[in-house]
Length: 158
Image 1 (spheres, one colour):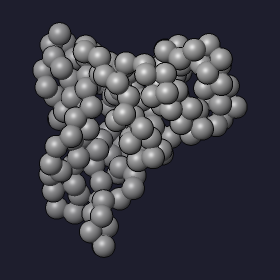
Image 2 (spheres, rainbow, N blue to C red):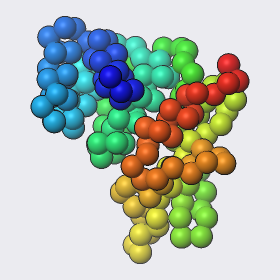
Image 3 (tube, rainbow, N blue to C red):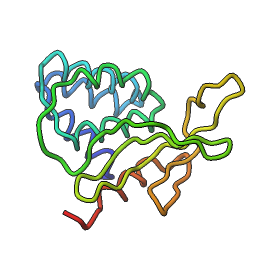
Image 4 (cartoon, one colour):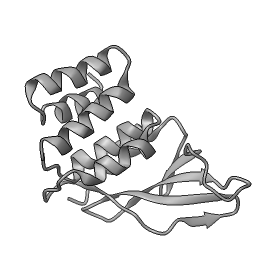
């Protein structure tokens, strides 16, 4: 089982069994977007507290499946609990020529920050999808969000 599948199972396990089954069934039949919505809504409805690792895993899965922007408002409403190797961060985007680096996830052991890199659109907004991910000094391609997250969580400063 790959890391993403393990994350889905672990996150679904936070829900009551019938809701967890629905989430995993959506994933298994290729309806990841619907499964993510069920998962995050279930966490909020059930008042389930999640730690930094769970919140970050949800953010990455949502990014991978192209629903980060639609899931983020509900994810922010999830009750928090202390702990975790990583945390979701905000911060001022940093412009680098025609690209903008948006701080996204940080290691709690060393404060390394994984950023999403977006193009600035002609009308001023950032591109919907990241063009790459950066965890200095490494760069990851647009399809490597999970690999970048794995590199962040493999920090030796714990």
